[in-house]
Length: 177
Image (cartoon, rainbow, N blue to C red; front, side):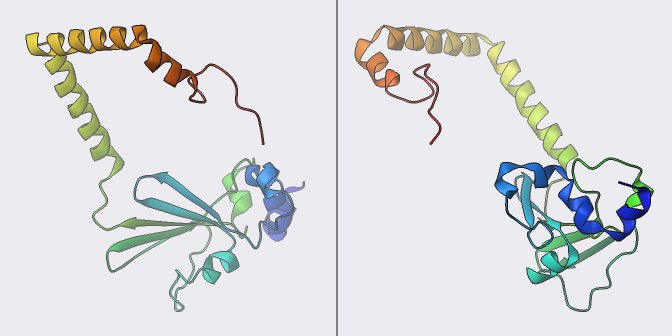
């Protein structure tokens, strides 16, 4: 595809994207559909054309859409919104070739959303507390008790028979429907 086509034929470019190649997209017109993602807890992303995003009714009618790769942020009640043009997933080429492509990302998150950096710090602090506890006499005793309970369960024939009936634990592959 020539560079000039990227800026004038969004539909053709979207057809080359990774989501368009998925079996689930077979027969769908991605120019009229939205891709909805939840990259993490309490964070929602819509990806699609401007018309598809506007059809969801989430964009205020007086909104002036950003030009190029500029961002637009606003807040409505308890939610923060962020919209920007985005290169469709899986499509290669320099960013400047996508300045006019009709493919957008609308992100919605609560105003009191904890940033990723703070969630990572909290998770690491929890891991440190758990590691510190495991290094204590009580922590080692708890781990040893858990080990012996597990060993006892593995020796229980009725429990093992129960486990053998659970798909994924029995070692057998599931049959595609």
